[in-house]
Amino acid sequence: MTDRTGSTRADRVRHAILRALHQAGGPCGASRLAEALAGLGVDLRPRAVRYHLLHLDRAGLTRTVDRRHGRALTARGAEEVVRAGAPEKVGFIASQVDDLGYRMSFDLRTNRGTMVVTRRGSMHATWRGPSRRSSRSSGRASAWGRG
Image 1 (tube, rainbow, N blue to C red):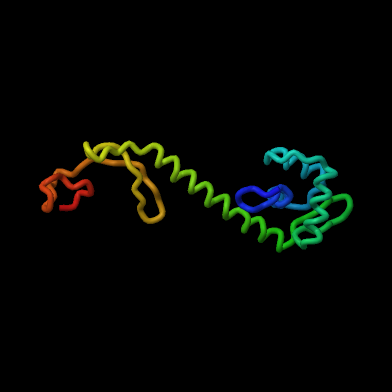
Image 2 (cartoon, helix red, strand yellow; image 1 turned 90 degrees about the horizontal axis):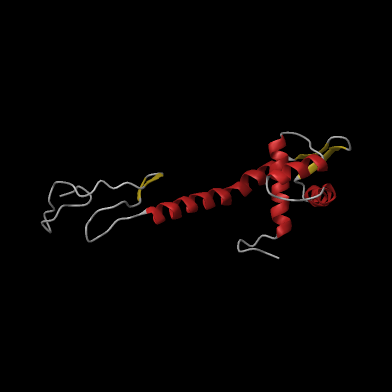
């Protein structure tokens, strides 16, 4: 079954395994990975983790260090962890925009309240109200402080 982003549950689980291996900083076995995954909100038993690790090995994203130490990320697997994080960052920014949008209280009739203003790389939800200078075109105060 796929979600609205087009990824299957297995894909999401495998990305979570790659993230857990990346956070471990070295080789990790299935039992330790299962514990780390529980912290990421993925409930898997060690046997299921081994199943997904087998697929990650075949894809060249992980490799077996030895039977005692478990698996480690390959260079390609580390790249995948970084690349897979990009959609999460986009989602985080989108949620910030939504949050600021819901907090806007600007009323066009009274020309008062808060609104979202973007400035090169940052978003702010502040509004100081109309400036004291009057607008040349309408005789009203300019909201942007320009005459």
